[in-house]
Length: 456
Image 1 (tube, rainbow, N blue to C red):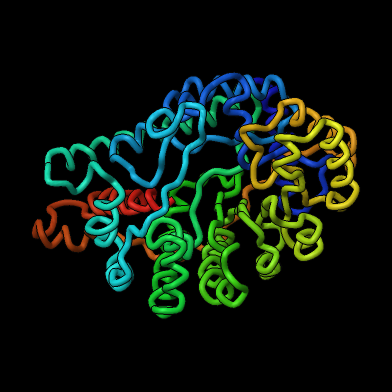
Image 2 (image 1 turned 30 degrees about the horizontal axis):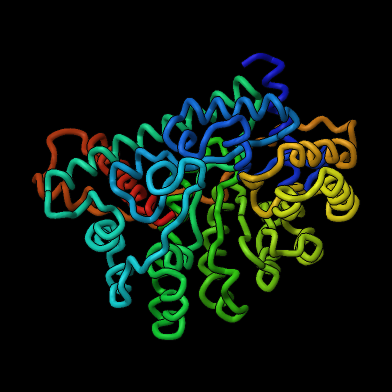
């Protein structure tokens, strides 16, 4: 990386990190967590992006060239061949199930039966392998054993290929464009695991009345699983926040949220913070009844994206002194509004919500696919005019914080076949047992974490 590109990367990352930490910086960052416009701006289709990594990277680089003021860039998180390899039923994909120019869609069903809570709680690995995955992965668990085994072999290879694609993309954007990532790694709140892919929204909410104790026990088990999954996919250098979309909270009353959603979600957040990470949370829908809870977390550790249905001004008043927030421009303004309307909105946000820092101007958790490019340009130009705090500040990256707890102390690591079981099966070993046990346990942990890829 050239000295000039390194300087640009450090400036962008430092500005972003300072904003999350509620510390002084030079100006409001331009750092949407999901800039979907970047995927299609240069003419690529949605199918191109999820099937052809080269076209995805080319699209992003073209976007960065035309919008060099952007401080962090993320869009696609799906590599379709992995989903094809296992016949994943939870997504409809552009070019396969949908027209090539449409975005992917999530398919919500009851993939877990009401009488299976105890199985999930007692043995989550066996539950995934025996119940959940055969229902959501069409290539797995069928009558053709060879096809099923091949599907898992292909999935393992495809997972490694996807990791290489994501790593190459990150390196290229950093070293060629000086562009940081807004997030690396992901998880979902324990209740959302139930409400998204296991039970579905209707069944999960009914379960809070019919079997509340089992819902709470399941969420408790999922705390450890989500902590481990998040850490297994996070940036090892702890430069970037871990991403969490929140899907079902906006449908819950304060009493339901306080009982079933927040306690387990809070524990995951606290443990990731203890591990030295920040978190970027998409508060999807209207979170206004719930977002005061972010005042309970350590200051400057969670960046909260406020959706279009939320009130960015109320969010600032309610918890904006404790955590950074992002948002403020309605999606309809990006898609249908004029450049003058965008400019006026940005100026107002800079003069109100932007006061004192800790704020990123964005759409409702994303920059929509259908955003008019001239409106995105108008947002940038307005931020560059009205969004400055102190031009004398030279942003630099923050040193990675030391974890406050060892990883192994943060969450239980589940394994389907622990080394103790395998060691007894083979009757002990002749040499250094630790040399054999460590990779065995690491691979077991990686495989177990992979099972929960399909809960996202």
